[in-house]
Length: 622
View 1: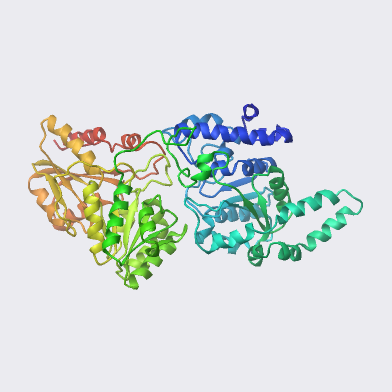
View 2: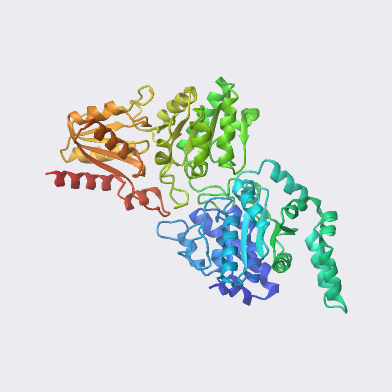
């Protein structure tokens, strides 16, 4: 196999040109085989194989710098930089990350995980290069879905002022996770329908450059490029008007055409955007047919693409989806907002049933929040469904545009807590902290699937900003008999004894049950409180707990700094109550990738770790 000859950075440059297409096919087969076993981001990676190969052929890595927007499409890049063997542990605990990581390779020059960042990062590196006086080439690869993010346009606006070389690859596959929506995709589609400008231009150059006077003719053609491009691809002139040279569209699956485009881009002392057309999931029929399903996939059967693990128990997102659908039937004022995550956040059914009340704003969380605020001002009940780590990007809009005006916007925060295989950039362990200190904001978290249903209904009926956070994965179905009505700021006694009181937030109630069972078998008396509301905190139940418990243990899948545990300490301090409190949660560091049980064990937030911490505190107290 040709792929056997790729063992370190630069090896691709030793592959004969006639073998490059075969290498691309082998890379696709390799990716399909490996991801079918480990799970991962398949569709995007299958779409950029030739593009990545062309970049590695034309760049001198690691001297040159290659920044991948989001980074989930960097699998071929990892193969070509000597990390082929790491795919057996892709996204596994202690194994290779599914995203670029500088700690893995000096060819990963910038850690990424969220969208729309690559142009800003690349522009900063360009300016650093120019200040140093060095000559490396800087390339940022950004998808058309990421281009809907406002940060990307802020960076493009800034890049238009450059007077030195900077290459931006726009990977246009008409997809982010779900199909792209809005004006930018329509604009890019108008370019896709034009003739192949760059391919035609490259063909002309190749035919005349070695002829007598060929160099003069090529120079004249270059000087006339703006007029030529205005004729061939007028839509591409938007980038030109921003001060960015536009080249394309180029067939992203044609290695030769891509190499020609990159060589041409290097000639300019300006920012250059190469518009590349690719197909998400290329080379694997199920992924081509269902690109959204194969954006991030669990292990699957390579013969048909069917997942190997057939989930029969409802997940938290499934419960949210069902409740939103039912609430939409009863409330004509209920509207749903998503930032390119209709399927991931469980809004597909709502979209199909109520298309006029469903709004996908693209990858633009900041806009989504203020857009929802406008809907609330207009008399509607907006629910913004968003991943916890993505909502971080809209901190100011939540504070300034929603909370300041005390507007009724419901934040349905999916993937709260530890999420597992996606690692540091996606762990949703900060939302309790960054939301709880906002005036007017209410923050709650359900213990099981029935309480999620009840809390969502409560949130939609509430009048003001409110966030309901819930984790990824299978919804807990225990404690069915404990279903007190949801009341603002009220926690729920599950078991009431004495001595040790476990106060658990959301999905940590399930873990707390396990902790209680272990401690009970060892003869301890243990109470359990389902916190429900992180803000406003239930001060009465905290004071009540202090009457007959010597140790209060707070459990949360959030960083300890600014979390629920600190809120308990504040209540006790304000009341002048002296009581031993053990705060357990996520430590003050970024948590790497791995399964959620493995990560909980690592940070001592699994049942055994919590029991050890509790017993150690009891010994210390004696």
